[in-house]
Image (cartoon, rainbow, N blue to C red):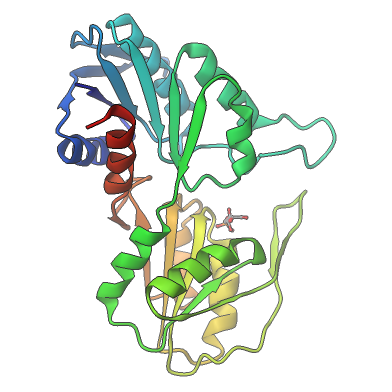
Length: 296
Ligand code: R5P
């Protein structure tokens, strides 16, 4: 029977997953040395078992990544026959290609080290770019879709004439999928990001918004800049409510306060990143995949 190895970034998701799969949870100790270095030790014997390491990589990303690698390494040292790395939020996935000459291809570096340290499989959730999956050359990398979970959560809101809005064209298919599941309409805005400054500009668009509940969906909310632009455009059309729903809520630079100031009444996210907004769990979709892979 696989054993779940919980990482410090995903304590609640790890418990939910263990419960959903009926896995035992390994005892793991973590310490931080006075100079800031991380220490990880798996205290359970994992001899011959598949270790399911659950560790997301939100801020502080580099520390979370190091802990992930330490958990994989320690699980192998504790005797596990295989390690499945569950990395619900895959840090650096927005650096999926080289945009400007001689940039580091950060997401590829991460894929290479996860493989090199000895993981046998990677599972992630709504990775920002599928291209990153192709950087895993030796092991299988699976990307799960949590937007149906988001849609199912939204059905509890009793939405009025819902419009599911993608703040950029690239995420429109996600908005369309959510809209279908909640019997709403979908639309998108056109967004541009300056590659050097990171500043986001969004074009105005004629949309019928009066009296409707607008759900702006995105994969990631980081600074909130993308969602704030969309919310400002939408609020000019007198909607009833503006709700923001994302998979990965990072909320850098007081993003939640800024979203509220831009007219967003509620922000919800999944537990790929655990926070007060992570009301939607991805445990079920990960559990279903694990059961399929392990035959139980
Ligand atoms: C970009 O393509 C992503 O889908 C998100 O829209 C973006 O990462 C959000 O970042 P921020 O909240 O900083 O605008």
